[in-house]
Image (cartoon, rainbow over the protein chains, first blue to last red):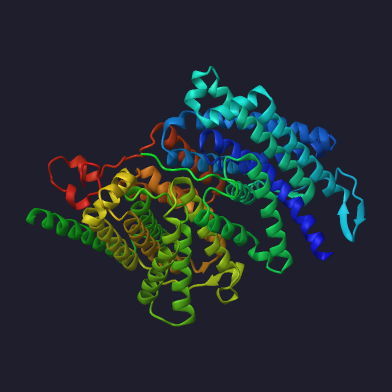
Length: 291
Length: 319
């Protein structure tokens, strides 16, 4: 029963990683850029939710939607200001820019409001259900449901709508997509908007679940979500979800075994093992290098 | 040939004249401890920048985990002097050697990766090194470790000269040219019969060795070392020196190390402002001048026909 409990906790944590990882994987799939600033979008989303709940008295769902909207705009802004000019430059230049943008956002937020942490208000009713000896709080159940619903919505957008079709086309071959009359710039912006909205939702969920947020909170979940994306095969949407859940469960198990200080190391060891033995990830296909 | 050799010695002599003048000023008390400390810090940062320059600028392998090797050098040398009562010079060397070994262990698997993946893997390794030190009680865990103050202007300057001489000569050697060819086009270099893995690992190990030396100097200059000092932000601090100077320019790395160390000394009271300026510089440089201040040129290239090129080397016109 102890193990079932840990499994459930792992899935809850994993759903947060999965939501962030989706943004990484979508952006990587479409412009081949590791958007390091994605963790900061997550942080901004969390703070937007916090202010919406604590100061404007909004409920959980309005705050969630508000923060998703703010993050979508913010993500598009980052893309238009920083990444758009770099589309034709080297990968390293784009990566350095992404690192720079990420740090810039962190420290601008610290500069504006200070580095002190903030306690998330309790917006969800908290009751515990006892299912097969596993304590499931209504809070974590709701969080899990919200994450899964968002993932299903994403799957719908990508596979059943016009913009999703455009996104898949651009990620397959941007030049051919352009020739077919797809507006590549708008499609890339839409990808950033959707990915960032998911990160914003993850931010609010993280705040409600862990109750403590601070301006540097995006760094570690951001990196771990990236690891989740690589684990599942970067650029592949279901891969990011599976990778997120696997990573969440592994981390919870490592903590439960009494190595909680090594939790972060476990994630990085997974990353390195994956990169060495199967760089294309669980679901990835091997690609040949062309000259 | 004779001319090249003589310009090399001229540069060495000039460096030691500079060293002597500064040492005299320190002994006379013209430079107070604050300035001396800044000078030592500049030396450490130049060593770090130049060692990372060899990995990123010359060999083109994007590593963002340099702080990991810095941490190893710092901790190993601190253990040598504080726990085992070894002399400082031996401790520095030991720190460098252990960092180089770690570079070998990290480099062999991860240098098979390219671009973004390599960057993330090196970042991961650096974090693992940091977490290991965080969990070892022998070195104080999160609280850190007390270290005596042993770094002087003399030791740091000697290490600096050693670093620059080794890296310049490496760059201008057959091995250095092989590394530059990997930077320019790895597949072409491979096709020309260059053992790319060997040269990538070699450059990585040499870079790690000097990062370890810098770590020893760093530890013995700060009285205390903590795992928190060697996080991702430290790697970023080193990265920005190389990027701002110009990927592939050693003198660019040296100039930006001097410049940014002075800037950050003045902004010590305002760490947030410093980070905002650093990250803005990084983004703006990438957007408007992706080749950095110097590109792949060296400062000596601007002196016309002085034929210094081969001494400072590493430029795109054949080094």
